[in-house]
Length: 467
Image (cartoon, rainbow, N blue to C red):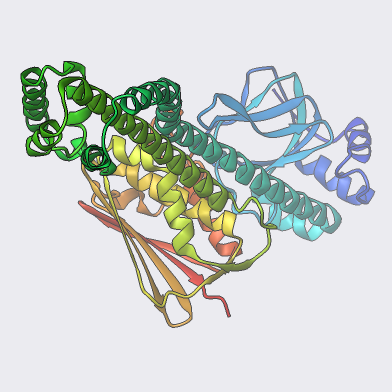
């Protein structure tokens, strides 16, 4: 509902307005004479998504909100309450809102058409200055909020990826640790049996030579399933022929022991001693295999934790410093390892040997690599390829991230860096990733470009080198 005209009540309300109340009375009179008093019921749309904002809005009462779903449910990104000024501002680009501006309470406001801004700037300099400061403050607040939200979203991706990556080695460590106690007990029992067999030094030497066959870690993993099955069957047959326990066939098949080696072992031992020797050998090999699995799992966990620490720069102050982008990109790829394997993707790194350091905030630069490489993984098909190269060009460090996905349509290439623009489904993308990448790079006096055609998309990041 619109109520044109100037009234004493309107002038009084303008004089009490939190944002504009300190302006001269003559400027209040201009607003009252040229504005339209409007009221809205809860749920009414003031400006629709995608439509240019037509008016400056001086809010007297109520609550206006823009809500947006960035992947975790719709939440508030802008709001105006009594005493605020919103809508389009003088000297602003007049961009369209990212979603509908909706009244959430009964709302009353004064709308001033942007067509009147040239006259308003001349007639209302105090109000114009106040509105420009308001616009700058809101832009700063919005930028800070978007960076924080995007960091939280990236943190969620990293957390999910790291949890997935940690699960396998952690499970392997737990499983092997539980089995290790029983394997050690078995080895101790076998050692007592062997010690009671009254063997000579030369016999012990032959047993030790056979035992050394389990020093080659993961030998069985080097064989095909058929070859391993055949090997286990051959060793099982040998054990039956020598009246030894068949349960030794499986652990012996995992070692590099040969039938000739077993024949040499059996040649110098009687039946009881042979069984005791085989028990000790297999128990020792099992202990070594389990400890090797624990070491491999712990090493993988250590590398993942180091990648998280390196990616986040958790022990660094958030100030520019010399940064090796090679480590940051490597840490990023480590954290995206689960997604890379899920897509059977190949990621190739190629950095110049004399690549200089960048002058940057490392954690923010890693945010750039995370967004670009994660987007590339989304774009490529299963089995696709991504290449990351780094070179120096004059005083700039240039990183190129290239994928063999379907490419970016020419009609949207100019929009991909716009806030809230996304080609992903609802909840799958925020539309803020590339906008924040560009903002972060500009904070570092860098820039980003894109070249795309079907089958090849390349993002080029340029950064000043550390001087």
